[in-house]
Image 1 (cartoon, rainbow, N blue to C red):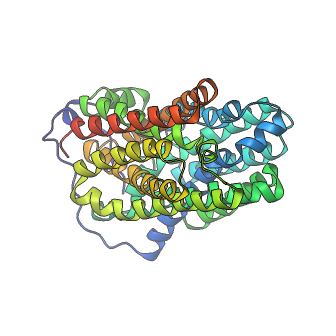
Image 2: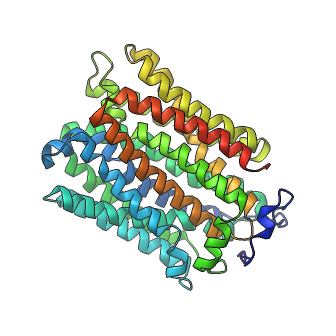
Length: 406
């Protein structure tokens, strides 16, 4: 089932604009397998996106640059993502979304291979640009694709499955990257990520059905959607929340090294705790999004802000840092589901346009967060980066909650 976008922005301007209602419909095993394949594709791409956070010292040493500069591998990914997400539907307006997701996954696979063999820092950055296009395009289409497979009364569960891919990536990518990076070096880790992308590609080819474009929104529709008051405030809020998170998370390894007696094993455990917290936050966020969306979208960013700030202040104790990391992970884990549920309620008739805008803003936030965090790390220290990042996330939460009554 597809949704046809409207060409006017007036409906979303009103707080009384109600989402479209579709009758409850049974979903067969093939439908859930298709959604699971989309979730696995997200898992493979986001795992690759997060890997540099665990490998910064080794990448920097190998490439002869600083850790702050190496962190711009995340920025390069996000900058391209910010350009791709709002335009992908307009670039390929008639392409079956099944083939689009398969092609984007193949592009992510190519990026991993190129990073693994990159002889220079600049080629590494160029390879990460390809990943940005793959990840942002895939994520921008995910909301509309799931919406075409599932009825309205199953959307919350469907987006939870997709976002579990993100949380599993945080469980796997950073701690596993830390451990394997120490054991094998950073290049074999990207070969492993390439293999993961290949599995995702095969799953999509096997299980994802043909998905017609949902109205194939042009750039004018995207712009009209962005100009509504609710979307404008919501996009700014996404920028602050996600930017604050990634300004801190990209440099979590240098931050963890403030803890006395930190070694690779204890760091891997700490990052595993973060990932498990993210998984828990993702799992419970669907219920919160369905029942108390406005409260959830306020509390999650405030907890991100509080926990990142606490990390900077309690770094003398491993146990205290572990607690703050668990809270941080749980709070961040809920953000994608909460945000995408908010988007679906605000713009139910323009899912591709609204989803593309939200994904694009996420990528802008990742790029700016990683860039600002790197500057703060190199000019001041990691504590300053954590405190400023936490403040941005908390302000974003307040703005998000006030953007629209949902």
